[in-house]
Length: 631
Ligand SMILES: Nc1ncnc2c1ncn2[C@@H]1O[C@H](COP(=O)(O)OP(=O)(O)O)[C@@H](O)[C@H]1O
Ligand SMILES: [Mg+2]
Image 1 (cartoon, rainbow, N blue to C red):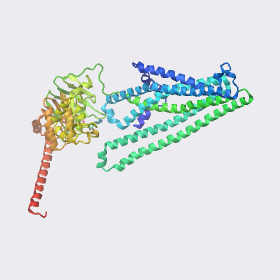
Image 2: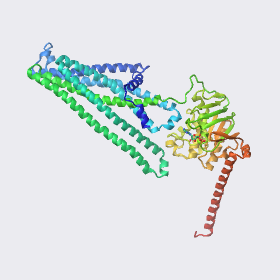
Image 3: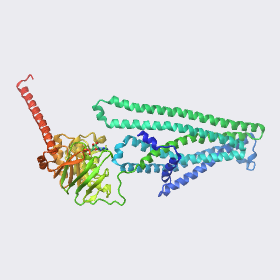
Image 4: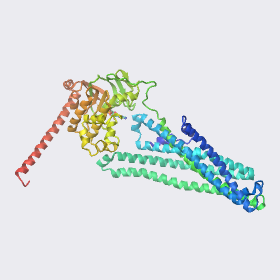
């Protein structure tokens, strides 16, 4: 992923401009006059603070001149205003005011910036959900969340630094330059302009170099984070194979990359700061020597010397910021670009313009010559046609990888078909809204993943506004209420990340309960019981039978014994329907289905014999124990 990330991040100005343009509506939010008023006020205080800042060295100069006895410039004013002490106090009051105005500006702007962060985070989050399953299967969640995290932080940076720092800094340079040129002549103006120019050039060059290092640091950070999350998500698998050392080593390798880049970030910062210091000190040294000679010659007062020094010291603050601002803005822009890059990823499955809601009358499903491929090079479904009449049940069986789950994903419209049509009650699902299609279908998947919250939350997920009684009733129907009652915390029990604290059967029953709450007219059971043992399967089967009664049901089954009663059984192999009919008809055909049936029978019988043999064995042991006390 790191390569694609770097590709979307370019250094050219066009990209930067478009990022700023993208950001503008968030800085100047339409429909929020209160926030706009804040922007205006903040700008006002900003200009005021800068004017004051530039004026401060004047008080310093006047105070010095007053102490020195050269009161020339201010003789027109009454003496009480021009006394050295008054001027010193004025100097300090001005400094306080300047700080106060700056803080006022920041405080006013904070809510604008935070509002922008929230709105963009909201938009990105929604967009993530609108993107296709394909996108999410290809992306790594850990890396994705980092991009969003950095992006939102980037917005804060941009808001703070462009508006609150760059503009005032430019203003301050202009004012300072004007004062120097006007009061002390062209030579001073030239020295200062050259210093600022060289300083900025050096800073930008050095920062560009550092940004490359920073990017390497970010990429390795993302990579390490992704690896850590993936490894922890596979906690059990890691243990099964005893691969902790290998996982740790893989993580450490990414961290080593990060370590190198992060160290370089710091050492390069050292070089940058040093270079800046040298350039500025030379410039300042030259002006001070020029001024000192004029004081010696009597063309400048001591106050002028102090003033020039103070003015330059003051200029060094925003200059120092130039590098920082440039770095932060570039970094912020990079991060935001990454996030906007995500926002620009097109939704693969879209509602057509003017799409209406699906109207479910009876819940009939119809596949018409459906073709589909995840990857154009390999077709998964090769012309599938079948029908599930209202309230009936159709089962799909077939070897693993035949495309059974793909059929359920297409029905949910996670993907659009490449040819053919899927109809629900005569309406092509590609022409109606996705939300209405999904609302009409309930699914109990093979592996249920639960939210890391309470059982109640997970059951209620089927219908958020269900009452406690309805939730309990659903749990009873799914035959999990008994289990929940013996838990110390009952419905308030936390299920752990992805529901890991529940067994497969329990998780599956939670999934059934929430589907019962949803009460959809169409139901898909995708190998809902295949992960469970025969005993649990039988228990759950009755719950499933209850749910699927009166509902159009598509059952994808692994264990054939569960679908004997289906109205039609479709045998799928390599994306094609090879047999279809009822259980009895298919057995008579003695094709693939009959073969699968025979093999499963044998397996079950073998299992059964083994179980019986074990039971007999145990009985024998007990018998022997009873007759022979020594054993
Ligand atoms: N997101 C995907 N991208 C590419 N190939 C996929 C994807 N999902 C499934 N496949 C492939 O499609 C085929 C059918 O998958 P699936 O419908 O899940 O099979 P099953 O019949 O076992 O449910 C498999 O060979 C699988 O490797
Ligand atoms: Mg499957």
